[in-house]
Length: 198
Image (cartoon, rainbow, N blue to C red; front, side, top):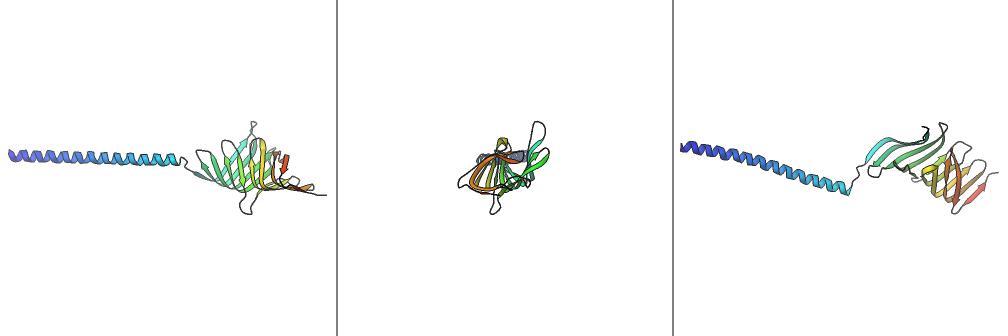
């Protein structure tokens, strides 16, 4: 009877030890998981954005009549989800008139915001931002070009504008608008020079 009691107590102690061991492991795992979640939350708070990179990125503006006003393409776009800013590489923006490309903007790098549709194109080294249409339209070359609503633009960092058969004008800054694939309401300022074509 005494031996049976000792064996029963030993089995009970062994079973309780296993149970407490399992409970201890579960508690330890839960505690470790809580610590990792807190660390993840802290990192997320410090850097809330998780960048998303897309090859062959595209953004466009479509009018109420379902026609495309402009279409931006880039070989790569890296988006910040919290701001909706997209860093762009090898950028092209085509403006359309009656369904056909009327003007093309090209830049090595840029940034676009998917909410505001503001686009800023940047030069890189000797590769400048360029704006070109057909051979009769004005051509523009600059270091930086910002496109805002209603086809407004602001060019900075040295601006060269060539009107075939009319003139070549240079300056530090320019602003105006792209209307139907051409420059309108153009104002050039800062060290402005003009060479009239005759």
